[in-house]
Length: 211
Image (cartoon, rainbow, N blue to C red; front, side, top):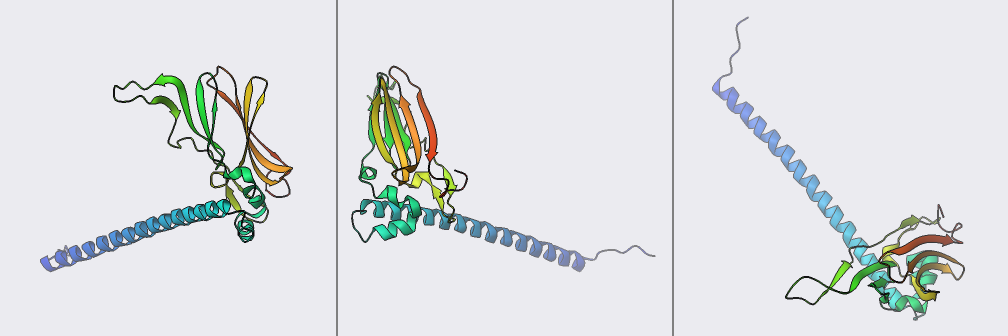
């Protein structure tokens, strides 16, 4: 059998086919990437809108027409959102060394500032901050038995500050009733930079899976 050779027209045809295949692969990848980006953007927008809706409902919880909407949005945890303490501002707690700002939305530490220690800058008298700009957000995600998914950083917890001996206690509770709740408990001790932190649940086993 004689050796087959490719003529000029065959090479051109193969080049066209290769270019076409490359274009199809690139176009498909671009479309997939575009769809993925669009989907992520859509999910972010939905999450942002949901959070904004909850914020609005909580701020207007005294309106009797709002409570059914809170119930629809938050299920059993709507109880917590109607309590007066959820509308409070950030709370600051100070010991000898640090000042801690707590956010009752999400129940996390928003900022820790070192007392009387300034940043090394001739242009600034700003105190040194260990935590700032919401860079320490704490979030728990869990699912209720009616298939709702909750993220604690979207929800308002009831904040209580009190003293136990020399220690200061900050308790954040996400409640379904006065006796059933998820609690974040912070213990601030005198002359210490470190905090004690614990999480516990009470009476939620019939509401949330795994509790």
